[in-house]
Image (cartoon, rainbow, N blue to C red):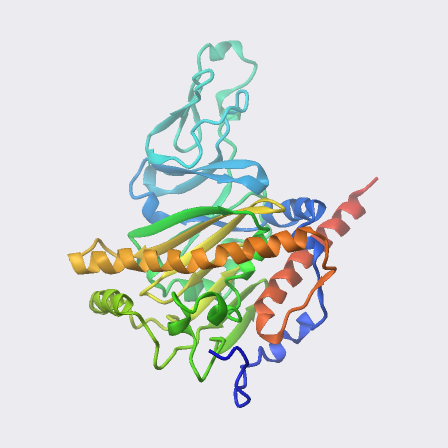
Length: 403
């Protein structure tokens, strides 16, 4: 395939709505600098709403799960308690700080007992019992687990590590909250998942999934045939949208996709069952939702996937892909379609990983002072704009509070 863009092809413009982002080169240091990473920790990840899971993981009263938030040095315990209320707490015993529950575990419990001195807490966070508590100089009511703000949108669970978040989750998401609730994820009962770690900064990792400029070069076998075509050789989106710190793009539909026989067979098994469940007619099926700072979701019900990129260090990240499903497999054919959908997603992602890490190694060298984004990489520019804005506001706040 000729890598040159046909002379009669015109890519869609981001529009005047994005003019405030400018067109100047973007500094490269934030993609590898340890100092900038520390600023992101305080300015962004300790203050933003972070997606950590789904209600289907807490199906009944007593259900719980634990999430590790590396960049905040935090472990968060999320429970469904009496009255089905969802609560979140720091996974930290209030006696001596021991983690109550191993990270990345889940199950059903009515109480949590510290392995160190057997302090026991209800799943609503209250201290139930502690050996020899009458010898302490404090009341039980003062020893409840430390709460973490938690809210739900479209079945997705978000936490905020700020003690007093400036905005509720719905205020934070704005009009996107209502749009997300029209997606299958709002009804999801199960999901396919895989988790990976990558030697790359979280922004560089995330950016790979915000642009289609690379599709026909990196994914000609696994994904390029369905995502690009003569009328749109780079598979550029139809439309971009900017919603404060968040962004959307409408995915282009290839009228004549080139799919393998296996792809045609597998997706052909999925579509009829999705139609029977009324999931193929949603208004945002071709929409890509990118929520600041590190979450995105594709509305397409055939591969209705989300991707969360959690920072570990300035040069390493952990990603979590999920494809959400509504209801159990109704047949062997549907099961095959679902399994293939995840296998296909992993195949596409495996082609991305090496080139993302190669990009990180190049940036780590310090050879580049600036990164140049083209017009169709506007979502990357938008993310970096708001990262910088948050960091600069934090720095001004700290300078103003200096004595």
